[in-house]
Structures are given as structure tokens and as C-alpha cells.
Image (cartoon, rainbow, N blue to C red):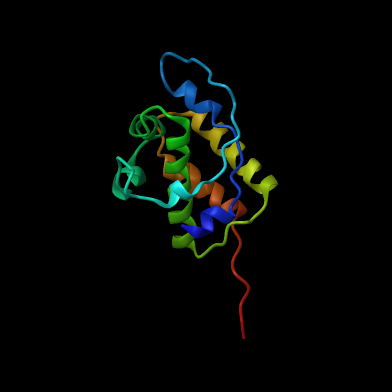
Length: 133
């Protein structure tokens, strides 16, 4: 998961507030990865759950908490990047664009798999490591 720390996903997850019927828009904080994001001991979910959960289900798993929802997104991004052999950029602008993409797609259909959204974002911004000879 160290790769995720280099991937500067600096974006507001204001859309998370729209996932519930009581659409109370939270302030749009800038969320940056923290050391806690690497710790799986504090999670209330397992990898199999988040890989098969919809956007709405992941919001519920996160306890309707933006920071925890972001932890799920970070974990999914790490899984996707590793599975595809991609490196995520250490670039705040790329992180912002990726976050905006995830937010927009998550808003359009809360019943779609969150992993599918995150995977598409990772494929868009991820790069193949340079070949060494």
C-alpha cells in the first residue's frame, strides 16, 4: 500500500454525503492519505467485501464517514494498480482529477461496484514501470 501514499489523492469526497437519503452535504475537506490508511487492523471490512460492494454498500461499510470511505477507495486503488502492474503518479493534480472522476461516477449510480469505478480511474492515470535492461 506504500504506492497509494505516493498517489496524492487530494480531493473532496463531498459526494459521499449524497449517498444517503438524508443528503446533508458535508463541507468539502481535502483528504490526503495518512499512515492509518495502511493499517488493516482498524477496518471493519475485508478485501472480498469491498471488491464486491456497490458505492452505497461501501458508504455503509465506512460508517457513512468520508475519511473511512476514502480509506476504502485507497485500498481499492492499490489492489487495482497491483493487479494491473501499474504505478500511480505522485502528483496532486493527477490525484485531484482521479478523485473528481471517482466522485462523478459514484454520484451517477450508487448501485454500481465501487471497485469498477476505482479500477477505471487507476487505468486512466496509472503508468507501466519503465523496463530495466
